[in-house]
Image 1: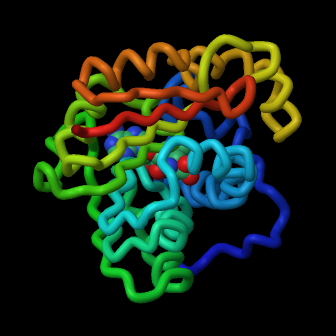
Image 2 (image 1 turned 180 degrees about the vertical axis):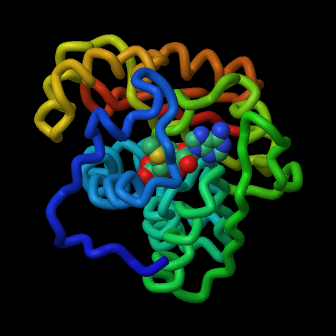
Length: 236
Ligand SMILES: C[S@@+](CC[C@H](N)C(=O)[O-])C[C@H]1O[C@@H](n2cnc3c(N)ncnc32)[C@H](O)[C@@H]1O
């Protein structure tokens, strides 16, 4: 797969004909969907996100960074540069997403080793040794999980002492704002209403509860805006 032409017109990711499941999981192998995730990255991972992330995790060097559901790998690229990582691990159920992640990591990072592995978190154990990761991340993915608690627990076990786990996702609580923002981005009003319960499955407090139940410490959450939230927990 070649790198996408990011200057091309935003594709109609939300075309109802492409939604195999109107409320649930998308087809993450679809080329247009991968392109949409790439094109919306800088809007989802905006200055507010990075400001809040740095507030929660600081700026210290983090050698090993893992992204659960890394998609096309753009967070791994930025985190690698920001935290001076020496090793990146990206896991995702979509081989096509990981093919794109490989292109971006090769093009945009230097002096970093990496490993990209097809993994379905609903089906298999996470293939990462326990106590080996400095920074674990999961962006816009937790709401896709059949058992979010299982993923949070498995992800937490990969952390070294002092390591941090970050969950970033849509949050429930403001359906009107969600519908407004999604329609501004090309989703039909009807699709936005239908998708709200799936995409905004958890509140900030729900995610904090999942992290605390996984025995992470000093768990803190921040609403980045009305519809996006960040939660960070520490492995002691
Ligand atoms: C909305 S995309 C987010 C991608 C990336 N984290 C980002 O924010 O740009 C959700 C990603 O989660 C992956 N995913 C969904 N369900 C999964 C599962 N059960 N196991 C592993 N990956 C999954 C998809 O393939 C997709 O790449």
